Amino acid sequence: MVSNSMDPMSMEASLYITSSAGSSVVPSRPHVSLRPYGGEAVDGWADPLQGSSSLPVQGSLPRCEAVVGVVDPLVDNVSGPSILSKKGGYVAVRVDPSAYKSRLEVCKFSFIGRVVLSSGEKPWKLVDLKAKLQSVWKLNSVWRLICLGKGYFQIMLNLDADKNMVSSLGSLNLKPGVLRLQPWIPDFNPALQKSSNAQIWVRFYALSLEYWHLKIISDLARGIGVPLWLDRATMKGDFRHFARVLVDIDVSTVPPSSLLLKRDDSADSWSSFFSQAMSVSFSDQMQVLWKTVIHAVVLPVTNDLLILRRLDLRGRPARAPVIMSVIWSPPASGWIKVNTDGAALSSPGVGDCGGVFRNCRAFVKGCFAVPLGVVFAFEVELFAGSMAINLAWQNGWHQIWLESDSSYMVHLLAPRFEQVLWRIRQAWQHCIYQISNMEFHVSHIFREGNQVADAFSKHALGLAVDSWWTNTPSFCYLLVGNDCMGRESFCFS
Image 1 (cartoon, rainbow, N blue to C red):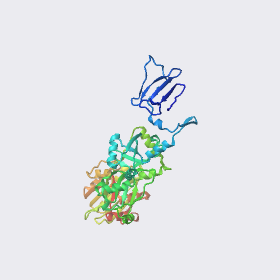
Image 2: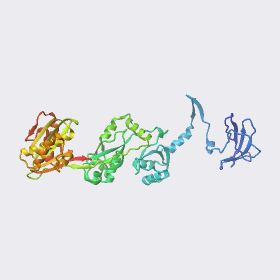
Image 3: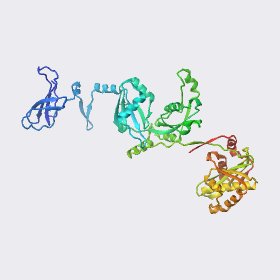
Image 4: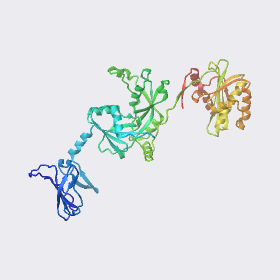
């Protein structure tokens, strides 16, 4: 006989499990005896399959405070009652140690996963997500995917081999969304979790041509985090100074600065490539994030993410910039090329301009730097262009190619437009007259290819009077040499 008693203040209920012969055998329909508080007992049969009791009808039954239904079959296997106590106003319950250890055994091969979606991406259904993961992991044993809430899932595996397989693949780019994996830990609570992940552009330097493959670059990125995207130049392979990959990284730990790549299964393939280990550099965004890490907790990033989640907003990674090669090119034979640039500390503020004249062999023919006083930012470029044209006219150079990083000035000079700001209008109209009497060409160049002129404009900040050089000054030897050798710079847009 097994007896289970309830609160005597509400009712008394006893469950008697007996057989027709009187022996202690569990019958198919256990007998239920209900005793209302202060009333007579009412007997009947409880059906464990249907979840209801069949009581004899004797007019109107007395009111019961509770009804004993189907008893959980696990109750019969409990070795003993839980120990209750009071701790700080709370009821403390000691769980059965053997039951707890058995559940730990069930969960020992588990992972905690979270699918992070970008704005506008459709959430996964549980069945579809499990099918997608099975197609990637290709597990041979039965496994379960359990939703925990807050976007978290528990992945319950049965074999250590399956756990090693899932762990080797790590986090996954599901398209849509990124599945981030972490080892299962006891007492995991989704509401208490804080995210410390960010999407960072990572560069892989010294990557030889034979490794320039989408699969190999993706495998390299997995050594840092979860690869999400490759920029256009990396996919095309036109820009081979470095490979650039958008990677989802846990910024609470510092990623490795170099990676070791194994080419084949031979033992010596590790050591032979160790001296050529891939060097990795991270964007300025990553450096800023690392400075915010205190005891492996990213405070500003976590707070921002929590605010966005409360507002039901999701971040979206910025588009990959287009990488363009910029090279300064010399003019044709008999022509003189002048590069100009202007600089202003504010608008309006102290400004200056500068430029350099070079021939078809990239030899310097002359340089100038002119302080302008207080001007607006857009005026300094016009002053630089008019000063260059005037100096070319004075030196008798009538085949001039003017190049500037100011698209505003180029758009004014190309159609010979005369209507400019009144303070510079007279000098500008004089320049239009001069270029109409010479062979003149004007073009735009990105700032990365106009570094020599930029150096002269900055040098003019420390000058009190106009300066002219017939040879290359010492402060721009290196920049002039780079242009002379045709060294390229890179522009990101």
